Length: 380
Image (cartoon, rainbow, N blue to C red; front, side, top):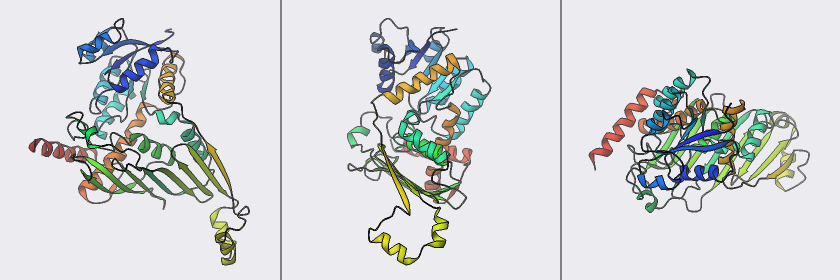
């Protein structure tokens, strides 16, 4: 049995360099850098004692590695994941799992045919103690059946200079979208992981609204969970005074997350339907005047601290532990399709100007995305 997983890093950019640094510094005790692949030959000198490749297929077939992480543009995640899995090389794909659900489904099908090969996705926010606690509360029915979800996540402010760093950035052909595929995939994943997938979405998406880009920089989406519950998801990249606030209302209380740091749990003493049947308007007036509400609900506030890099390190450790010891994955790679499908549905609703049901028509989405890519190319 191997004692440490030899990780091949495909793409030694910002993320790849961060992961390599964690491993090189001994912060991932069950992992070593097996090899590095990058198209820039100058990066060979960063870790001179580590095998270096300019072609990822050569690295996959080298025998130098046990697993790979794909820190590359979104379109390449499924392709590289598939090629790794086919060769029995464990694959950890970056988020999002891909740009469109059709290609991610192909990745999942290959992974399903290789049950002995580990397939994970880098959803590091699933290791965040706050969101793990939130999921636990919802799973344990702490606030009852969900009635409504609201997430405003507009803390992604990006100036025009950010988009002009690279020609591929914030393009349909190079990146596959804007805020939905670049900045907000973690929140989209957490939303469905904690609250479940909606059955329908209706979205108002603005493209190049406050930035000179062809893709989306403002999103407002109405979610329909199919059982009476609804939700709203709002995100953008032009709010320099951004908000991060996630509310989940249930029939036994409410949970509010502020700035991904504070968790406030308000538990009703009785379910709302029971209070509805017994309370009078005089009771309501007392509450509105700031009276004693202890007979109505209790409140618990939990503060969380996040150590920079800790969540990413935990994903790497857990991925290696699954390979070495069978430890359950925090984020199985097959889960990646859910967030991609939801983002695709938001786009598709906007493009078709109508409500869209999930699961989406994956062929239709791919056809509409292709139109966007072709139109983009025509104006260059």
